[in-house]
Length: 215
Length: 250
Image: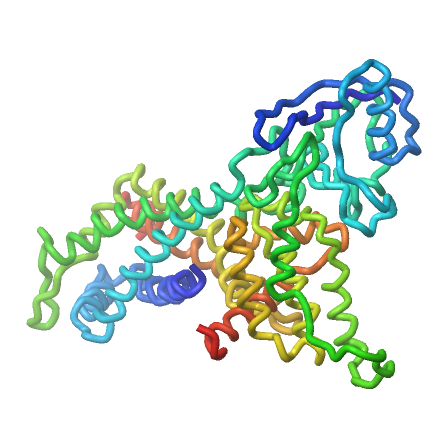
C-alpha cells in the first residue's frame, strides 16, 4: 500500500505540473504539445504502465486488507466512539479510495480514452499535426455537473492524502522526531491542500472560461 | 449517584450474548469502576442471579487485567487509565453506561466481560525473550547503556498487555502491543542476538492469531493506558522489513 501509494503521490506532482499549462492562456497550444510528448515519449510510456499497475495493485491490496481487517472483528461493538481517538480520514480510507477509483475510471474514459482512441479534433502548429486535447477538455468542463463532480472528487483526494501520505512513511518505518513533522506538514498542506486545490481549480477555470466569465 | 448500566452478558464462548440493563442507586462518586461492579455483583447475588464475570487483579493500574469497553472506549472516557483507576466521578448522575468486552477474533469471549487474551502470550512466546547465561547474577552496569536508550526501551516495556490497543483499533490490530515487545529489546544490547528472528517470529505469530493489519489511525496509542507511542510501530516496521531483507531465515 505504501510503495504504490507514495508512487501515486509522485505521479500527482508530475500530472499537476503538466496540466497547469491549461492556465497558460494560449488557447491550449502548450497543453497540446505537452500531451503529445506524454503519449509519445518511451520513458513516459513505460512509467505510465507502472502507474496503471500501481493503481490496480493499490486498490486490490486495499480490498484484500479491508476484508481481512473486517474479519478480525466478527462481533461488532454495540456502542463505539471512534471519534474520541482517531481522525475520520484515517478510518475511512476505503470509502475515500472508492470515490477516487470511480473518479479515475470516469476521468480516464473522458480524456485518456479519447486521446488514445478518439474521436478527437486535430490542430496544426507550425506544420505539425497535434491531437487537440485542449478542445476536449474545454468541452467536458463546460458542463457544470461534471465540474462539480471533479471538485468533489478532489475533496476526496485531499482527505485521502492527509492521512495516506504520512501513513505511507509510517508503514516503511520512516519516522523520526527530526523529520516526521516535515512529512506531516507536506502531507497535510502540500498533498492535502495545495495539490487537490490546484487540480480542482482547473475544471472551475475552464468552466468560467468557456462560459465567458473570464478571458 | 444513580446510574443505568448496559452490560454484555454471555454464558460461555459458544453461546450468543446480549446487553442486559441494570439500575444502580446510591453509587459513591469516589468508587472505582470495578468497585461499582462489585456492588452490582453483590446485588445480583442477593437476588439469586448470576454475577457478571469480569477480569481484574491488582486494581492499581499495572496488571492490565481489567478489560472493559466502557461507553465506546477501552477503559472508559479518561485517558491513560485502566478500568480499576477509573472513578465514578467522571460520570454524571443519571448516566447510561455501556460495558462490553474487548471485541476481536483473537480475543474470544469466555464469559460476560472476560476475554481470552492468550494470543498475546503466544506472541510473546514466539520471540519476546532474550538469551542470558544462567548462574549468578551479572554485575550491575556491566553493559553500558546510555540513559536515552534505556528510557526508550522502558517506554515500550511499560506495556501491560491489557489489549486496549486491539480493542480500540478499527481493524483489531495488535501492532502497538507487538511493537512494544519488539522495540523494548531492539534498542538494547541484550536484545541483539535474537533481534531479526524476534521481529519475524512475533509478526508471524500475530498474523496467525487473526489480528488485523495496521492502518495507522493512531487509536491504539490514544487509548493505551501507558501511552505507548506510534514511534514503536514505525520501529517494528523497520525491524521487520530489515529482517525480511537481510536475515538468513527463510
